[in-house]
Length: 218
Image (cartoon, helix red, strand yellow):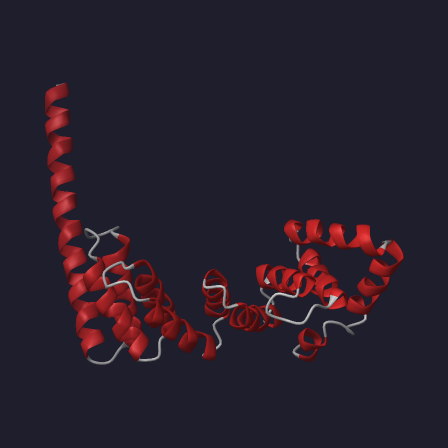
C-alpha cells in the first residue's frame, strides 16, 4: 500500500512539474512578444524571470539583455537592475562607468535609490565631492542613511565645507527617523559642544530652519 501511495505521489509531482514548466514557457513567450512590441514593463519582467531563478534556471546574460532593453525604453527599475549588473559583472562585462551612467539616468528620473547608490560608488572611489552631492540629493528626498552620511561629511569636512551645525542638523533628522548610528555620531558632537548647544540646533530643526535645503523641499 505504501509503495502505491509513493508511486502515485511521484506521478503527481511529475505532472505538476511538467505543467509548471509549460506555464513558465507560455509566460516567457507572452512577455517576450509584448516586449518586442515595445512594452518596457514586460521587458523588465522578463529580466526578473531570468535573473531570479524561481521558475527557470538563472540566465543572467538573457536577464541583462531584457533589463537593458527596458532601461533604454525609460523604465527606471530596469535602469537600476542593469546598473547593478554592470557593477557586479553579472551577465555582462563588469563596467563601472556604465553602472554610473545608468544610475545617473535613474537618479535624474527621480530615483532616490540611484542617488544613494551613486553616493556610495563615488565614496568608494574617494571622489567625495560627487559622493556628497548625491548623498545630499537623496537626503533631501528623505533617505535616512544619506542624512546620516551627509551629517558625517559635514562633521569631517569631507566633500563639503566643515559645518558643525549642519552636521548635527542632518544627524538630527536621521535620528528622528530612527537611525541609531546617527544618534551615536550626535553623542560625539554633544560631548564637545554641550547639551545646551545641541538642544538649540534641535529646536532649529524642529522649527524647520535647518537644514535649509531639506526644508525648502518639504
